[in-house]
Amino acid sequence: MDDDSHEHINHQWTDDHAEQFVKRMEGQLQSRYEPFAKEIAKIYLEYRISENPKIMDLACGPAFLLMEIHKRIPNASFLGVDASKKMIKYAQQKLEEYSVQGIEFKQGKAESIPLEDNSYSIITCFNSFHDFKEPKKALSEVHRVLEKNGIFILKDKNPSYPKWKMKIYFYFLRFKMGKQRAKHYYQSSHHWISPQRMENWMRELNFQVKFKSKGVDYIVVGQK
Image (cartoon, rainbow, N blue to C red; front, side):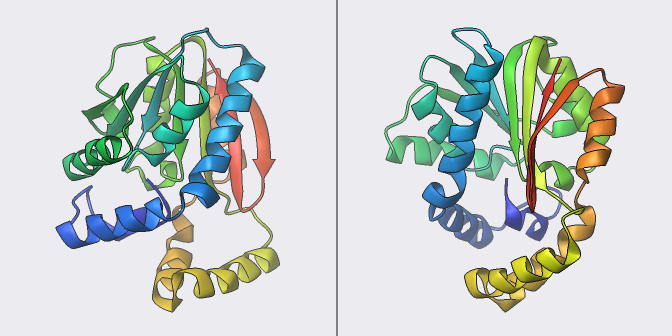
């Protein structure tokens, strides 16, 4: 999912809120989803994963990230997993609107991913991991589902970002998102998982860990 994911409770969305969320995220295709999809494609080439990788996006939301990855790694097969039945319905609608084929969906929670062991080459997650009720358990599930040498590509918010820079960032968000949404976003920051904590969890599971960036967002790759 994304920055607004704290606004829903237990994966339950009202119709109005879900529709508003999807519209906001669709308006950020170029600024948010395209850059991360490009980074994922670079990482895919760097790690030399199989020629026909199986890619799963965890907490896929309306599937905008999957659609952007699909453009850049068309030889892959794709699955979106999300806990919200309503959000999967929106994702399917967006695939039809954009005439995208080859992406499937399953409803399921991150803490109990409904997939077999060693079944996916690449798993991605974008600004949602800190929202999971049991993120460490979710990471263990990611490790279970990944094939040997498969990779987990995570982008999430960085609570270790320097405080003075964070204040500037939130000031900018007030203009971009509005005062109330920016305030809510700021208040949600205590949920964020630091890069160091995430690295420790990954290493406990015997992931090989490599960071790609450590800004207000961080990108980390864990190879099984």
